Figure (cartoon, rainbow, N blue to C red):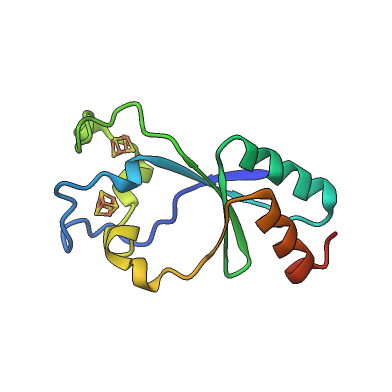
Length: 125
Ligand code: SF4
Ligand code: SF4
């Protein structure tokens, strides 16, 4: 079972500037159930084969896919006044642009990295 998500924490959009940045409009990030067995790992390898990257953040597994929004212009949102609720609530207080040094996630980009992590951290092999 997979849940669409984009972490939200604040409605305060003005404390840091988004000027000239469109990083968070260029991907989708989906929370996934942690794998329990090789069948689940196999499914995640399938994601990786399609260009996804797996993030593990304090036990939360996420599937990240770099794909820009249909409404992204050259560095700006073409439907800004009508943008989605998820976009309105995504905070630049905690976003990746201003908080990269505080983001501590395991990044699994290849089948081999995923298999090694599953074996070492979950005992799945
Ligand atoms: S919320 Fe952060 S990543 Fe998104 S556009 Fe603003 S500064 Fe860039
Ligand atoms: S609707 Fe606008 S703010 Fe939301 S992801 Fe698309 S371009 Fe970005």
